[in-house]
Length: 139
Ligand code: FES
Image (tube, rainbow, N blue to C red):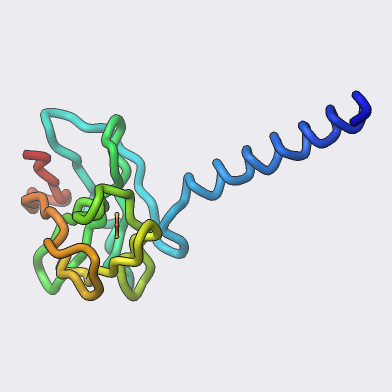
């Protein structure tokens, strides 16, 4: 291979790799994402993030291995760790379900397994409503 072609193909490969990184940044298409900071082993989410009809929010805490899916139910919130209980791969949420791209497990918004090979439900973090915020406790 000529040097010029080698460099050209290398540049194309690098650009494709960078593009994949951008796609991985938002691995829950169509859902709102809140990036926030972990403080005192907690994440604080403003309640107004759930104004309107949305009942799902992806929360990305600084330094956390996986995102958290915050699900609004009537007057309570469920915070699900987006880590597959099969082999620990990060999950993707849509407005319908939560999917694992590794081996095909599917979970509902209660964290319950809808499709194996995962057998255990998703880990849930305790939540608390305090004034106009939702606090996710990372215990
Ligand atoms: S790691 Fe999710 S199904 Fe295997």
